[in-house]
Length: 292
Image (cartoon, rainbow, N blue to C red; front, side):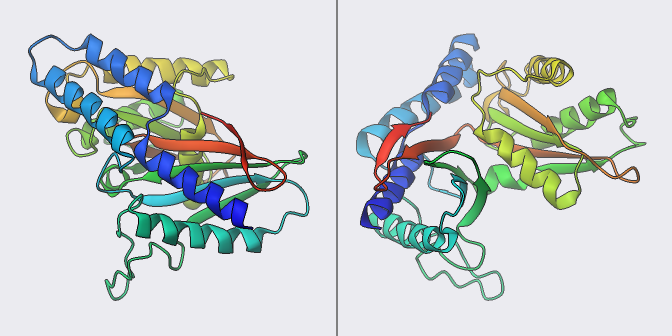
């Protein structure tokens, strides 16, 4: 129990203070791509410096440490209630330690009790797998990027978007246009084609668990990801909306079944502070392997 608690606190600390290597490489590539002496280059340099300082000082990369989203792959018979209780303790301890800011409030009263724990917080998604070990992935998603997520219902007459992949492309790019300058770009898109309104958004966020550099195993979705990434970076929006070549760092798209009457495209936006980390735990609850 104590080992699990300690491990969860360390996962939170590292997720809050350290950008994963794949994200760091994407940010450095974006910095290299920007024209020297431009505002876009300056914005990317500030981002790079911010990342370095946060890691050195073991302090949050961003003052908005965001929603705490756990994704847990657990063996059959795992005690989910015990994990949830321990996760709530870990979030409280991490908040007291300063790894998380005190930014979770009661939606009815606006009261902030300083723990980041309450109904729905933290958010924990459990998945069973046929392995003996426990895998935990954590996303810290800030409010600024959460606010510019979007969900579309196809067909969309205004955007001339039909119920096909071209229609999906049109609405995804519209989401990028609407987000410019407001989502702390350069951003990463997580997209779900299909599902209902609730599962579409949930699955779109699940895409953030992928590596930026991976390629979609479905050829048509891989082509769509690469096309949207290229097109978005040619729009001239750039870092923080200041103009430039780095509007998006990555695009991750998945598809799930839908009912014939509905065709939703759900777009979640992640800011440059792409705080995502994961671990595999040993039998005693200790961290055995970092996954990113």
